Image 1 (cartoon, rainbow, N blue to C red):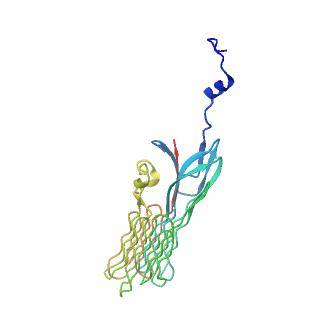
Image 2: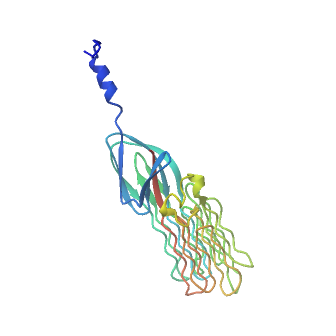
Image 3: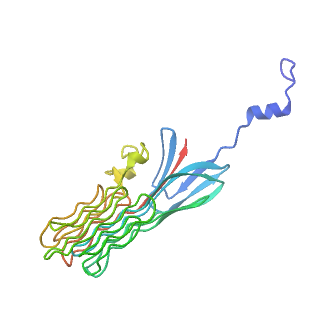
Length: 294
């Protein structure tokens, strides 16, 4: 009986005290776990895992592949990694694997291409896979490699083709003695530029972070320090004369007479190296972000 003589049925008492189960999420090896506004974010810049306990969690998942390495000897720029934008998944209790793809290594000389970026994955209710960007071509291995976005070609080599979401092809290199300009790698929102008789091609533009999620800023997350854009293509390089290609924002620049520039933003490609002994720039690793309502 209640204090006032009214009987409370058992079902009423239970429902007044017990609500729906609440899911708990715990990240292993995440670089940052932080609540901003109405969302909690789990940011992975290296591989790790996500554990869900107690109840099903509805989460959004962003997966970005690693950027490709630049080519050597008037090499092409590396391509940007694929971006799978935030996708909704319902994760039942369990542990889920997060793989972050590495950045591709720049070519060590004119007989090899830049290495493709590594593939990133989130193995959840379904597997989300983002390919790494294609490596840039070098003078003796001319075409750019196929990847997420394609690597730029060198010495008349074709650009690598693109595969996956938010990816574009690399540009085509040019034979034009004495500087054989290389082409730019493809980015997330634009193709890599072809080389021209006056110089190497620029890398394709990447994806602006705040267009993905307005909270993804360096002010909110130290992981993004110095970054505004991800998955840009690297710039191509010329040899001896002619202008170098500029990488898309956060990607590596081509460098005549020196090594290609390394990428600085997630999923961006490295720049092409200039002379025969000049290595290509390295691409930047990818990233995985899990977002859940706070």
